[in-house]
Length: 478
Image 1 (cartoon, rainbow, N blue to C red):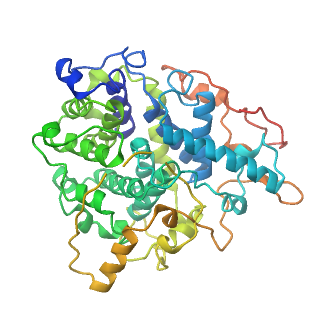
Image 2: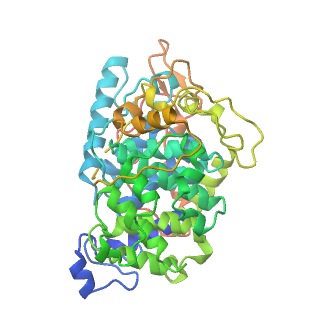
Image 3: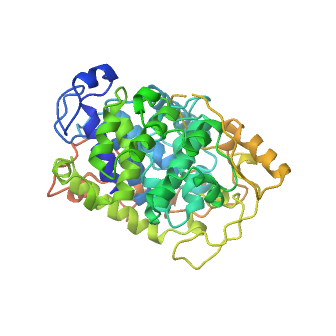
């Protein structure tokens, strides 16, 4: 329900995107419509869902969390309309665009350093090279809602391992949005989606002490004050817009608005999504963020069926959702290219896995002290709150507060000291300068088959799949 819920919210708000609150008071959105801002058909989605699909396909295709591959697919969307409902990129945020362009610059520098063809750089697979690629592409201080709008695939994929799901949720946002607030907003919202998938009640999800009751999921790494303030219930305002709830592009505002809609929706997805849209401004993203959590909590069957039938590429997304669940069920930390990063999380959760018997010895320093090259970028605000942590010593509490105020660039920079296991088979040249994984490329024919019997995502210039029998180093440049 989370993926479809997100796309419903996106499509619902698309036709009035950028409209101010005053306009929506005079012309409230009451149903799913087409036209408007982008001239879309009823049910078509915008950048929010396109980027989420890129992320979801990366997780499924690589069977793992590979930040480089995620950025490649975002680049394909930006340049070629990959996973767009119209066949071309539109509605891209300025910070996201800047980060993707910076990623391209990093790729060009990398090809020169390692003697890799520019035509092949998108298909980089060798773990030793991936760990050396700087995916930190965002400027510091970028805290827009673009990091949060695409989040759902990560907690859906890793929900069996809450601690990892939370940390990877944060990292997924930072590759385009480099502010600490973006990292923490994604960690907190990822934790809420995981909790919803683990059948926690709405009261538990909206508990003002959710963080302290799930502290081990956050590896005792405090949320920054702005996000902690939200976690402690700042969104619970009956007056909504009149009491300061805003559907803006700043990630703090967007998170607060989405949670306000969930808190006040009277257990109705339709009511909550409409309330999110009618706040005005960044209508599609506010509703898409709402839809991720509400869809996970209410489930597919409780989504408005009168809207679902119009969801663009519905069967494709339903199929993809099943693949996320299937691949996530099989995923194990030890097989991940991110294993060394995950090892840095302290092992203070004795029952971390859901229906998994193996335990992992994770008692190294927190990720804040490491040097990790993984990226981000978008909008920002302020608030303060001090969490209730009675079980911690003052020394530990002070250390965690210092961590919460560190710049995101120190949280997201990592160079693994040991060789990481490769997530896919590779083909290398004789000098092992690079490895191209031919299985990570999307075949237009395969994509077409996956989308039959439904509206099909428009064709885009997706790179052709290279042969896995006789690997070559020639492919169509995207």
